[in-house]
Image (tube, rainbow, N blue to C red; front, side, top):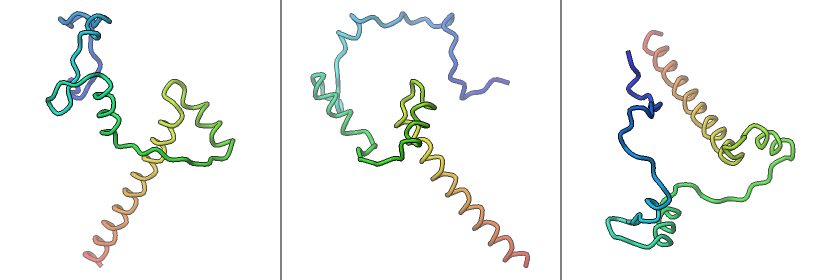
Length: 108
């Protein structure tokens, strides 16, 4: 059975030619359906990102750890993902505790 969420593609079956720099140079940029220049499009993309720029002080060993682990991904991305995982794990623990309390009340 194949995985419908599989994102690995076999290039042998790709009918579309590869993009060239000329293709990219001919691209038109649109914001909310309106054609705009590249700088206006870039501003709209930056504005639409959900991340917020902050300043944070980290212990040198913590920063070194994330920089060493990150590779090409970028250490800030890795720190963000680690914080997100921690946050989701905490939600899971709280939900599980609530379910257990409800079940114990029901049978107890």
